[in-house]
Length: 606
Image (tube, rainbow, N blue to C red):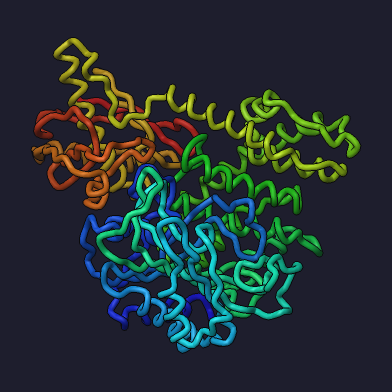
């Protein structure tokens, strides 16, 4: 069964069961404390906790997700950074019985899987929460033999919360027995079954019975409502339904895998490197289409990491070939029917990746030359060979070589010489220093959205000019998105009484026509004499209402939202004028590159 049909069967099934189909939310979550949308349930957290009422009490979706917690595992059969999660939710409607029955019905009668090969797991309890006997009883009533039901603890059979606190609950995982022929290693469990890492049993669906709330002190309390939250990875399900050894042989990845081998031009391609390239180039395309650009921190740092990791694996396969652009075009062709934002942002995606590829080629050359020198006198006999903090910082700061790639490259060379990997405690030590270095760097940078320091300006005339220019940044931000697309986001600003400076995510120089159109839109809104109003609300509500926010900022729970008529709506602390007619005429002074993937506009008011 092809992936397109797997998606359709899933959505059609739950729609017929009374579920409302919800579109995938952005990879950039509304919650500012989270970097990425990493689970299908994230957009529904207010409903799961009972804080808000959903449009429907039964929902299904196929959610785009991104996570790096398992990035070191990418390269095996099933792990990915970007993935699509099939899910159905019940918000105080049906609970365990119906969730289990529908899951089995879909798998057996619509995907035509063999029930005799289905195994399940349940939660075996923890302090204050008992073993899930109710779920076990329901599975048995639905013809899953007791001997095919295993119980596990918090690590395996208790899901959530996203972050340190929030909705969570025990879960039942559905596994499929692929048979003895799929075993790749000896069994780690006494009795082979779910959670054995031999490769025979594959988890295909997780049913979470969301009935608890984890508090900040680590304790659990009952939620006021009972909810269902399920998740089935599309790639994993496709692997089972298409009877493949790994996700990378399904139609989600196969064109990429074929192209990688073709570009490499070698008889045998390192399978792990091939899979990492395919996974990471797909992730990069989706992250860029969401408006994320390579940078030294936060989401941009993660994007840069996956691009560079893909490049490094490409170099290890064939140092003379460039892989990323032709592979990116395949990703766009493969996924644009479902995710049109890829086609809409194709030029930006390819430009960003090409620029990063060229830049990192130079970085790789310098960093690898430095590592070559470090290993000149290393031999396998020197098993205790270690590198100092200074060496790692030097590789990162002087040569621009990423920390993770430094670790990978150094470990690879140590192994080639018969040595051991860098000790885990040494790696953890450096990682702590590295994170501390990043925190210090961020603290030293001004990141406040619209942080114009108005209170420090004593001259009344200057204060008035700065207030007007700050208000104009809101009009400019919205105009940029109308002309260049919604992938544009604010990346910084600076305002003085003479001009505004506005940095935004975009990888190409603006044309004269585009600049004229932006000016025209801003000046038209000024002439319309739009009122500027402010409302206070929760941050989540603001984002839900469509307000723009500077994603690097850490916002309080209650924020101010400034609206300029029906044109612009942003989370901001101010200051602002009362009406756009106070602004005068807007004029762009200069537009140029600020850094990789970031453009800068300087403008003023007359």
